[in-house]
Image (cartoon, rainbow, N blue to C red; front, side, top):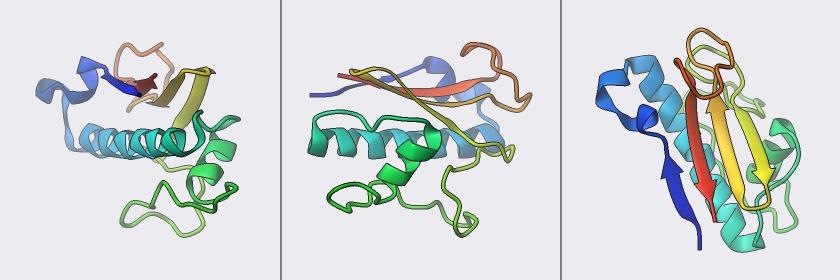
Length: 123
């Protein structure tokens, strides 16, 4: 069974502008797709962000599509973009954790602080 961990910055209404809301929605969609993948395979998809997204988009042994493109997404895009037109980052730091991140409006990795956005799953 998976437990869902979402940082308060991700959902706190005082921190939500339109761009953050859009990005949060994308991160949550990817995170939930990873959870469904985990339910079917007993593990999270592995590799870099591109490899993970290809697997979630249907390039897996069962050809199951876990992640569907957001409305208005550029055709052929593999890694979804955040609201600031930068690739989201998918990480599997351990075999029991899946993390999806955006570096926020400033584009800098602040280790989850500042304007970074994060969605995490742990089993």
